[in-house]
Length: 343
Image 1 (cartoon, rainbow, N blue to C red):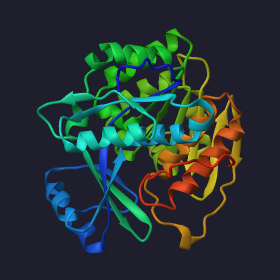
Image 2: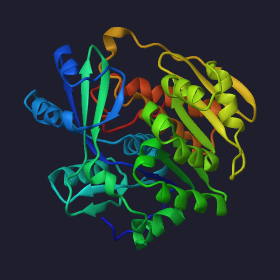
Image 3: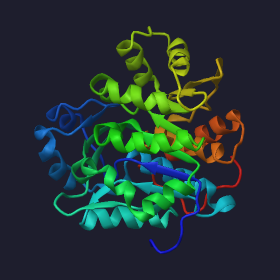
């Protein structure tokens, strides 16, 4: 897998997790003090959850926010650009790690995982109830990524070849230094960095690393919950459009910054060069909704698939919406073999 030279255009770096997706009742959510539409890191009290849902006929799906976005982008780009994406993160030397490698590779993504011999591959409990979801992530090996991995020959090759980089905010709990190293390369070589706010807890508990990442970022993604959280934390007020404008106007080390806030079925807010545009979202009939898990990741993947082709901002959002709509009609970020040629 690592013998052919990577000549792709898009690189992701983040926390590779094996998603354990399962339908649950309210009793399980209450038992583990988990709320729908939330993303949290597992604490000691959550550890029995993984064994409990293992008995509920779960689906195992390659996951992790950034890896999902890269897989979706690759799926869309395959016909036009072939294998043009890569992903780095840390897994354990175990069956779950092999499963993640196999799944991403089958999707056309070059994975260059750091292998942690002493820790198991990270997992994420995806608890689904009435089409909504809660995520409980046990990072395990994903938490052990080290900047030294970026010094491997394959990593250098991937970083050099790529023109676009995507790193979700979740990675800020793992290795801000690795993010900064990639970001410095992007600035020095006039390449593009996109990040994601990812979750409320990132904004609340890791504000300084997040500010650092935003400073380097050309594109900042977030949903309405994360947008409201950054408005509160940074005292930007409650109006999401104003919050987007203020984030876009923060100092940028690498040219200009575009901010994209999704709001589920409500309009997507985009601030680009000081101009605000709101894009309508085609609502999906409720009976077609299977699982909102992965909608945000799919939106980013769709958006990036057009960005790397230097298509218009309108096209980026349009394909982002299309990808999210496709993914919420299946369980987890499960990709059909072939991507439709029209969106």
